[in-house]
Length: 58
Image (tube, rainbow, N blue to C red; front, side, top):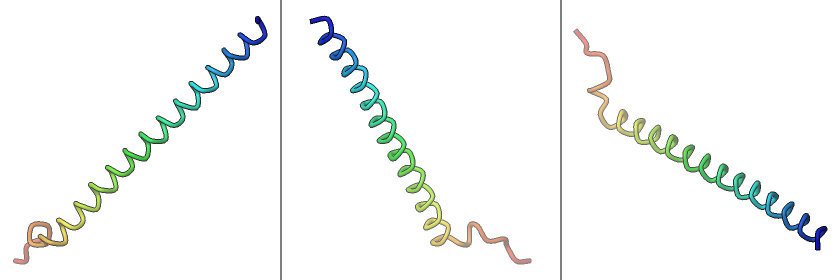
C-alpha cells in the first residue's frame, strides 16, 4: 500500500502541474487576443477618422 500511495501522490503533483500549464496557456492566449483586438480596433478607428489624427495644414 505504501508504494501505491507514493505513486498516487506523484500522479497528483503531475496533474497539478498540467493544470497550471493549461491555465497559463489559456490566460496567455486570452491576453494576447485582447491586445490584438484593441490594436485592430484602434487602427480601424484611426483609418475612419483621419481628420483627428492628421496634422492640420496651415
